[in-house]
Length: 197
Length: 234
Image 1 (cartoon, chains in turn yellow, brown):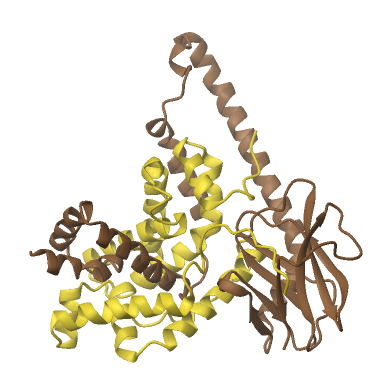
Image 2: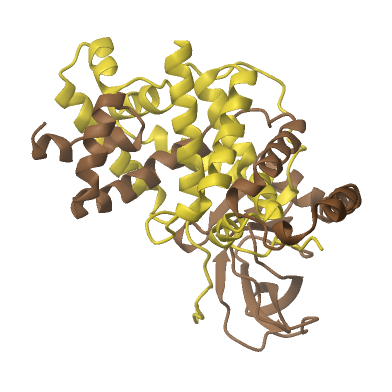
């Protein structure tokens, strides 16, 4: 019988996927498929390639779920890392490196559960706001690397800067971004503590 | 590459900004460098948050089915099914068609269940989604970036909570709108799973506090304990 998995944590779903529980993979897709596709599309700028990247990443989740170590990373980070890595591999192969924002494609915000859509919207605003608060040079380095798929050497060449400068901009950009977002913002499942305020 | 140079590759690795040769060198180093593993975990959180900033259309609906179909085709690679090999070949041949039919039926009913749930949920939550998208709606963060109270210009409000643990057996979360020290019930919810979107049944005027307590199933008219979290509409 199919079980209702909606109440399980991401990490519990990965553990079920490791035991070949297909509904667990479906639930993970329902939670992260949308963000995964958006990321792949941003990097690849091509719908068919983005779909390939997402499909391959979720199959990698399926195949290697047993190797996932919850102590080392959050399941959502692990999944999105697999998606990003796949997208970057493809973009380097296709030489479609573009970091400009997506055009005005039609937005159909009706897919996914209402709660997920609302949360993703708030999360997007929050991260975009944090990005705006980064120093321009750090934001540029992060965006070109993460969305553009450039390697650090390509970035150094493109920007005409020493590679050491690129490294330190990427490092301080990521560290600052994490600070601005407060660590654990999309973190482990939490149980609110009783407080008196 | 010397060790110091390898330490410095952590941010680029977190962003997937190394070439294949550098990746190999860094991963070998990572295997025996505790400092880099810890730093990488932190920087990867920063890198992953960039995925959430992307404003993109949703995936085509058929992608979900394609992925699950491909996963199903690989299923036996993941965990060999016990007992399958013990079934005699002739019986197995007859059984496969029946099994396939059952799998399809279960699959279809689970899809229907899912759709029904989505519809029911959507019917309740449409207002809350519109509210989050409504122009001029205010966002008041809960501590630790774990959720947000959204209040529209007209005072309509919703709580958006990420990964709140499920309320204990026999209990429920209950939301309250508190004005001048007087709490009024504003809705029940269970938490659990991914995101909880809770449209409050009561408006939230300026100066009011929205609080959430854990109560017995079915809810109560007055809170019986201290709030587990709250936010003030300043």
